[in-house]
Image (tube, rainbow, N blue to C red; front, top):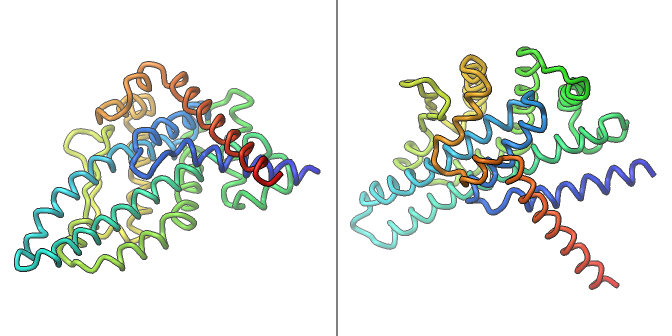
Length: 281
């Protein structure tokens, strides 16, 4: 009976998270979801907060990449069909990255909510990887006691979650997308971004030589955490508004804004479940 309850909760959270994450291009919506996970953790779970910056920065980066792609596509000025083909391939690459961002949001939400409710159940290991159980369990225990995590504990949780996402969501999908992009010039530009999150000190960026390189992503992800820890988590959260993409309501009342998103998501999920039950019946 306990496993049945746990399994039902997992699948309900998965449907809920799919609604909350929106469409692949809904970066601001996902940033609001990420931020709320950070807030619900009492400011202890840094991964979703930094992921919110990744979503908002990525939204602008994709627009810039599309404009740059249209410019460099003129290397195929001799063939309009070839130019269109390469631009379509670049769009597919960006679509894969957008979907990665969406899937990471879904996974982060489900893992956080499921462990918050069922961390004490032995069967939870069926749904939550072992490498996340300990760090998330310590997070929820500290939250119940009203104790903030130490910076080393917060870093350990961030690293565990970051490595989990790289292994289960990001890595293979990104590598396949990069391998499929047969346009050397555009590929070189797309895989060498200079990340400029809003909380980074003036003149600071996190450059990539090859975004498809897992080890480089891990090094730079940990660097993003370390810089955030130095500048302070309140500043990191406040600077989400600096991208100019969040809904003003999300800035003025983040908890209320997320509550409305959650209410609508649950209404959609339950409505869909009722329709499915009616069809089966």
